[in-house]
Amino acid sequence: MKNIEDLIEKAAELQSNGLISAQIADELNVSRETVTWLLTRSKKEEVTPAPKDISVDWSSIGKSAKRLHNVSLALCDMVLETLEKADAEVDVVVGIAANGIPLASMIAYELDADLAIYHRKGQDLAHKGNRGTISRNFGSVAGKNCVIVDDVITTGSTSMEVIEQLKEMDAKPRVVAVLVDKKGVDTIYNVPIRSLVRIARVD
Image (tube, rainbow, N blue to C red; front, side):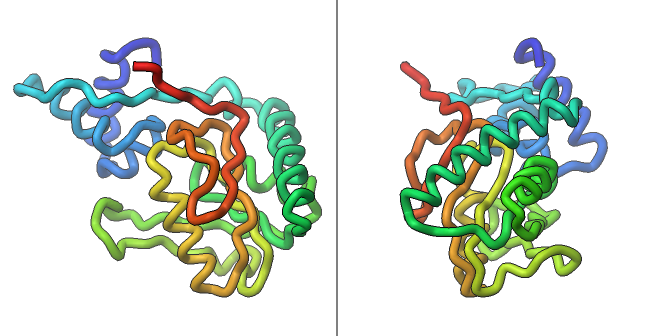
């Protein structure tokens, strides 16, 4: 996205195509609060000041399998370093749908691990209790050491959701690997976060 007007236009377009705010936030890699602000701006209503957020556009990586592969190798290196420090292994790589799946697939291949997919609920995820599921069409996570893979951590809510679900299934989340960390924390629920890029606002 080139500027704020592009973001506003894209958010309105996604909403007109039937996406809810949580899905728009995932697609634009911004917080739900930012989506609300963008959609309000698109309707030319009185709005509150802009939330402090950063949009992440990684489509230059996403459109190229070769670039995705190279980025996944870098994430693998970070995951292996983290697992070695914790004297842990990996059995399953859990990709968060939809943006985490391509990276998770490549990382699972490189680590010779099973692949599991976490589907987020298709409802507005701001309501408690609306949790996603581990797909039955892929690897099982029960009782296994898991690496969680997503594209961007914005608030950390999705990672928290996945970690909670894995623990309920007696799985052991060992590390969360992402392209970009906008939250800027070292751990979520005591699970290390490893990112290629960490963004910090200085204002």
